[in-house]
Length: 453
Image (tube, rainbow, N blue to C red; front, side, top):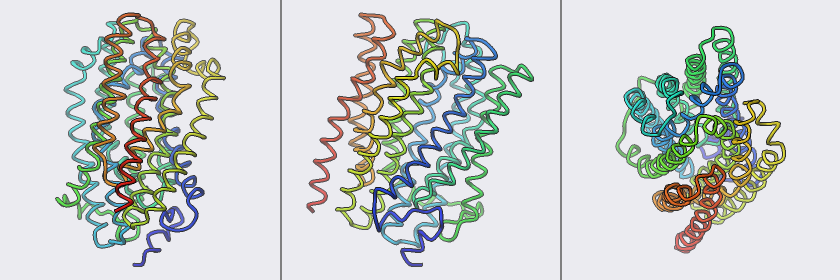
C-alpha cells in the first residue's frame, strides 16, 4: 500500500501534501460542528428540565458537568494519545503497525469505560456532597450522575474510535454519528420528560441511549474500513509498544483535563455556595461556554493531527505552517462565536430559562467568561502542536499552573474577599491570558531546538 492509499477514502484528508489551510478547514469545521452539535444535544438535557420541570432539576443536571468531567477527562485524554500514535504511523508510512495500534486503542477504550462505570457509581454521592451541592438538588444530582456513568463504556468507544478515524483525516463520520445520536437524545428527552414525567431520570436515560447509538455507528465504520484500519473484535490486543506510546502522549493530556476539572469543581463549589439559582444560571451559560470552547478544541485537534503526521514525515516547514494556520483560523472562528454570545446573550439564554433571577446569573457568566473564550486558542493550539511533536508533559504542567492552580487560589483569596458571582467569573480570562503567553513561549523555544536539529 503506497502513501496515497491512506487517503483514497473520500472522507479522508491528505495532511502530508498540497495546500494546508483549506485542508485544515475541511478537517476542523466538521469536527467543530460535531462537538458543538454534541453540546447542543447535551444541553437539551438542561433546556428540557429547565423549561418543563423546575429550576432545581435544571441545577441538578447542569451542576454535574464539572464532577463528570473530573472523572471522564483523564480517559478521554488518552484518546489524544491514540490519535497521535496512529497519525505518526501514517506519516512514517508504517502500514504494518497500524493494525495493532488501532486494536490496542479500542482495547484501552473498553477497559477505560468499565473503570469509569464502576468509579462513577461509587463516587457519585461523596463527590457531589464534597462540592457543597445544595440540599434541594443533591438527590436529583446523584441520580443523574449514576445513570450518566452507565453509558461511559460507549462514550470511551466513541472517543477512541473517532480518534482513529481523525488520525487519517476523517472528521466527517464522527459528525454523522453524533448527529444521529443527538437527534435521538432530543426526541427521547421530550418523550421521557414531557410525556412520562421522568424529570432527571428521563434526560439521563436519553443521554445514555444516544451515546450507545453514536458509539455503535463509529464501531461499525471501523469494522468496514480498508486494511490496515479495519477493526475486528476477535483481534483485540494490548501491545505494550503502542500502549506505552499512547500513555506517554495521552496521560499528560488526560491529567491536564482532570486537573482542569478539579479547578472547575472548586469553582462549581463556590457557585453552589451562592444557592441553586446561581447554579442554574451558571449551568445555562455553561452550555455556550462549551459550544465556544469546542471551536477551539476542533482547531487544537487539527494542530495535533496535522503536526503528528508531518512531524512523523520529517516535514518541519509544513509543521510551522500548521501552527500558523490553525492559530489564525481558531482565533477567527472562535471570535465570531464569542461575539454572537456577547451580543445576543439574552435571547440565547431564554432557550434554557425564563426565570429572571436565573437569567441574571447566566448573563453575568456570558459577559465575564464566555465572551473571552477566544483566548483559549493561544495555549490550546500551542500545546496541541507540542503534543504532535511528542512533548505532552510540558504543556500539561503549564496549563496546570496557569489555569488550575491559579483558579483555586483565586477562589480562596479574591472570591473569599469579595463573594460576588462576577468576581468569581473574572478568573477565567485572567487565567487564559497568563497561560496563553507562557505556553506560546514554550512552543517557540522547543520548536527552535527541534527543527534546528
